[in-house]
Length: 473
Image 1 (cartoon, rainbow, N blue to C red):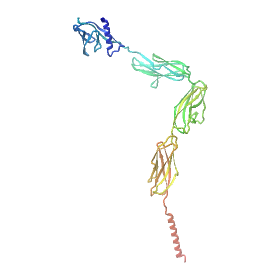
Image 2: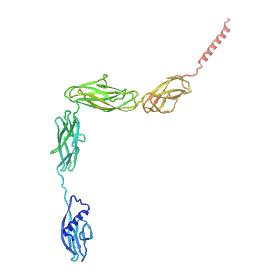
Image 3: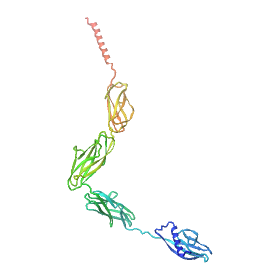
Image 4: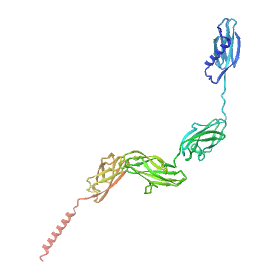
């Protein structure tokens, strides 16, 4: 059965479409620019290309030469029912071939791309148009404004539930207008502060930039409490043996005065807490009255055990409303080790002789908690001409509760005058230092008693001689 010319042409066009590289069939079609018979030696000019056909007598294929100024000349042979794609994307198909008559039915098609419409105007959208929140929460919608026209400054507006407030921000600054260059987009944050009295359910919010708007929604999942509690910081660092204080603020969100009970849960066993009106007050509070619509500042003081170790300790501050609802705030005390150095000796005053060494012990104790003293050494200061030393030269570390000993040796000069002198020993470490002064009394050998005795004897002898010589007269 011989295929019809129309069937063969359609098949060739389909083959050409399938093999055409670089063209998307989703948005590209073909249109015939020549269909008809050609004979041996015929020439056709199509879309800037010159196509020469050669049909040998009784041949089974058509020789095609394609010339184009921008491409290399192509020379191909096409049999009946096949096609060839030229360098400039023309599809040459041999639909039928009569070799005896040296003619063939040829179709030449070119691709036609459907242009994608260029968008115009403004598009406004949000990746998270529906959000969940508690009554009283702040909800943030990132709103994108896409400008497909020329440079434009948009005026922003929004609408929401009664009692809700809306604010636009860009780069953390409140704005009411935004400039968007041509063909670009800007993302602004729409901040929606819901009301504490909001009922449960989905509430509509509309964001607008000039005449362009987008519908947003907030689903209130739970009614919030009558009081808001906040902490200036949620983690406080304290040394072992000291207390930690948290600055808290209570806000009465209702139109009536309320009495709130104060408590803490989750503290380690043996730890103590107390609420105070300020850091300077001494009285403790178990409850506080906050007038309607006002705020009250409190100080929560946490007192750890002296035996507590370093680490993070979490607990919960609890405020109980008059209707029994608990508002909570998670807090953390981070305990770190402490150091406290003390320096002592058996005595603070010693006697020494000129040119002779005097040694005494200096006791260094770490009275801190947890943390060690490191890089400990003795720095000895003495009068000029004295020789001083300390043994050992340094101590790597002294753990909390431990005591280490330095032996200090001083040698006064041999010709020193007898008197009291001061020697200061400063114990230094990487953490702190402590000094202690010592009185050194220099004593020397004396000939005065012997001279006195000799003088007395001489006087007695002299008196004896005088008496013997003149006494008898």
